[in-house]
Image (cartoon, protein in one colour):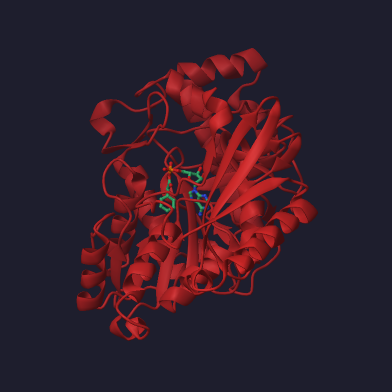
Length: 433
Ligand code: DLL
């Protein structure tokens, strides 16, 4: 079942709509934003130059730096009287990125989130336990409004207070869980303490997870620990919040709601477009945004796209789960590694869990990589000799598969700090020096 017929429209029809919307977005920024007017003028282009979707390549990119440089409202194209909501993404350094929505932008957001819930099989009969943080972060309210739109009962639990969340989930009989994958796993670990039959106390059937990179292994763990269908949602505040893409029951690839968000893949180093199937940086142009219409926004997220038809009947193109971030790519003694590749190796090793932390440091001129990994409960009761063998096995696998020399430190179960929001997987001490 699709929430909106457009999700299964003929591709020509879809692309015709996208071109019309792209043209009006380009007109909009050219006439209402001095920032874009100047950028277009520098490149010698006007809205008339956009006569096909291919022509988007003529347009300039927008980056997070541009948003920061115009902090807080400099890139808005509506007066404050038309702004209905303001969110911001947590800036770890400096000022946060501020985003605004008109009433019509909020309607689009509700609509795409309603599609996400429908993709996960949710209906008005469901009880949605929403453990995404409420506040400036777009997760909480984004899911909240989408659940309301499909008529489900929403429990606005927000993040934190694990024991209380578990009690509410049990007592209210929640059928859909919405949270970050790491928090879902953390909740499962706490729930398991109640005994091996803990699942009999819950009525969950599906979960909608996102906001942080997640390996196949972690997805499987979350899905098994809760006995649920795992659905992934992707999104970012600059574009809308959660609700840019999500996967159906048929595959792990995420359908992009391309009637609202036009996506491209580029080579992050050269800015050149890459063909379908090739991995690169995801660039998004929202096609219907009023308050903050951005052109070719560089997300910094690495993925690939495909237009191959999906069994579910949706014709929307699909993207693979985010492989990593352009700026998260670690260069260890000249070798490029994404944390997701390290996670893949860990996921394929028995005896350890997916709770890990990567610490990069310098020893003299050499990069030093240390990976702390929690062992499973069963392993702790075994001999230390086995721990040594396990450590060596992982170090070998990292060397053979990724060509990296790492020092693996096996640590006690539950000793790495748990996150309520997005997990901190990498500590790069080289950046602090
Ligand atoms: O994280 C919006 C969101 C909320 C998405 C809840 C999904 C669920 P920001 O705080 O602006 O917005 O962070 C956006 O988070 O550029 C990605 O790097 C990362 N991210 C979001 N979803 C996924 C995902 C929200 N499914 C940034 N897989 C994005 C991997 C994700 N990374």
